[in-house]
Length: 295
Image (cartoon, rainbow, N blue to C red; front, side, top):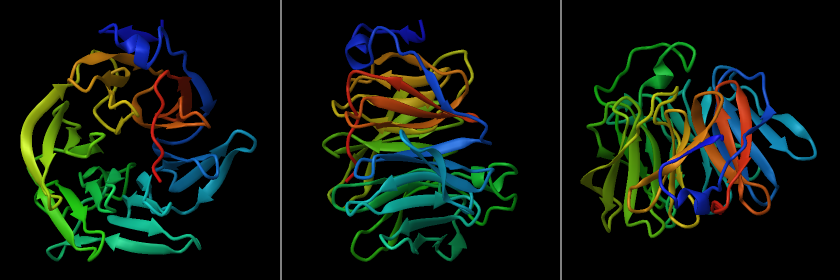
């Protein structure tokens, strides 16, 4: 079997097994998978290659953007514009419908951000992103000293575009995702191997509610990309592959992947194809519970 079942509910969410196929290979380090349901395509990043790529069932792999400023995480805002985290420039940018780039965030209190990593958009249009220091390391970014002495999570206001620091006590914050009702925000910490949960305040701020779950396993992989499916099950990169948690924080099981998983997203017409960024390849498997449209 290609899965580790830790709770019987895994069979309803994923299935009895989840055979993984390699869709494409030969990249440097894949990340930031995001599905565009309008165009029927997958966009993903290859950070060390300084390129973003597009995949379609009919055309296979094509270049989407080159250079990409060593882009990492991607998402779409409410208007269907791509929001991207850039390692080489320490920026968060938005791709307008005409293809031009708008810079959304570069500095906090006059100091350059570390290297924005993963990003999500709330239903009110506000943008939340994590800012670890991975993009200031060789290979994954451009080696350079940090200007900030912490690694935090931020919010960009949808009206003023003001940048607010929400939390700064992570080792390396990485994947983040809202609960279905957006009353909670989950953020994982790569080096500590756990997921924290925060209550979302009326003004968009966060109140720490503690550690929600630990990621366990003896295979390759760390806490990285994280998303919620259409029934509220939380999926996250972790040891061995993609870990699946029920809304009650029970780990239902793990989808094993041949390489360490960095990120993933649901795609295809039924949103039941789980596209997985892992190492030098793009993989895909089928699940029972679909993902969600981003716009």
